Length: 287
Image (cartoon, rainbow, N blue to C red; front, side, top):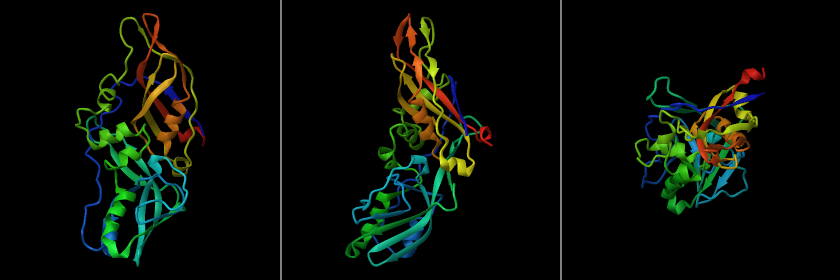
């Protein structure tokens, strides 16, 4: 399977006008029941905050993972709950892992949609949370520490740095400090334009991996990331501008980090230049 990469300057590549995330679970002071837990875990999807891999995860009463687990891509950290069992000082949650899918608006200015979908019928997950029965009400904040309903502010610090600007923009599109505002402006956030400037020239690109999740789900599309090409021609300060999901965003960023350029210049002297790069993932190249 080939993933196609193009060095492009994208005018107005993204017009994201999105409502904030669904937020954390509402706080409750009552003693939890199985029914109340099930109600709290309802919704389009949950996010496993730690991006933990593995099919069996156990957390203690402080919300700490009790075993070693790998880290999976942020957009593959969604969970859909199918069964909940509350007994004694233990909550057992069974479900399946899902991947986030990001759909760009068809009309400029409309919201981008975020949803979750399975990539494999066999990718199950079991989460066990142990808690103090004498302080059963602490189970509610424990759930809040381990999961989020959709995307919320608490997800941002634990996400990879190249995801954080997009997440902040999604959650707070009207924030005047929003880093993505300039990048999604009409000029695509590009610099090194005008008299005396020469933009960077791509010397070597790297084909990104195509995540197993996206392949199994037959999921394809385009990821747009922003970069600064420094004076030595190396990409720096890379972050996602338009996500795609199913792990492909991370694949795109990892590939772009390895690109090599002739740096941009100003009156013949190397300068740092900003712009966007589009990475296209197409299943048709393999099948």
